[in-house]
Image 1 (tube, rainbow, N blue to C red):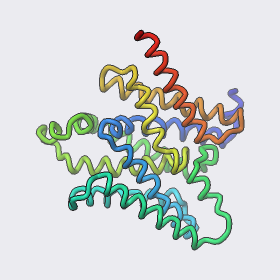
Image 2 (cartoon, rainbow, N blue to C red):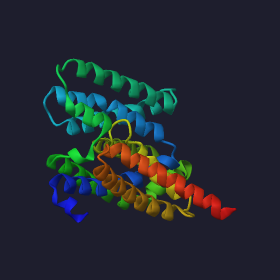
Image 3 (cartoon, helix red, strand yellow):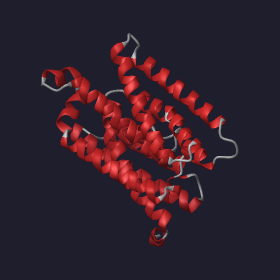
Image 4 (cartoon, rainbow, N blue to C red):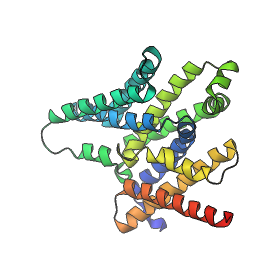
Length: 268
């Protein structure tokens, strides 16, 4: 099995998967606690506009998707704060507009575009060296920020009003978390694709919630489970010649139901 990691593409997939799965799992706790699953899904789909712009301009689609995601995240935050639109409505507006813009830009580029298929469905095995550098650098930077601000983020995740009373600028941190989540989602798109990336924010936390009795345990086990899911899914997809993104998600789903069934069995 170790000979697999002699291949450069497997090395890139392994390192990219390790860093991204930990980051997405950590953020997933915030997403689940704040009920922001639709936000992450909306940003993922809206980022199609950025991917299409990169392909159209013959530029790295990951970079243009990152820029687009930051713009869309800021727009969603602005609409939530400055209009009477609900959060779901604001996300839905940006979600559909971004997708529509992406489709329009795609139509301007003739011929088959394999890069677009890769971003739609994801393939961690096709990560390039430049993509890996961007992923690792941003994952480390975001991870460092999250660790440094873990007290504020924990309070904001558990109780926004309590965070405000504690002297935390809740709106500023909410905007920062919007931006961080948007960037992290786009980084995950290369691994799982626009359609499936939200799964790695939700599934590991859902599994960890079945057994965790404290917030700290929830964070720890979410990260551990996420790493296991990604690495196991990566190996299964390689040996069975299956799509990596879909295999990772289905591996996580299988683990969830196994843990759920065992927990129910031991409770009765």
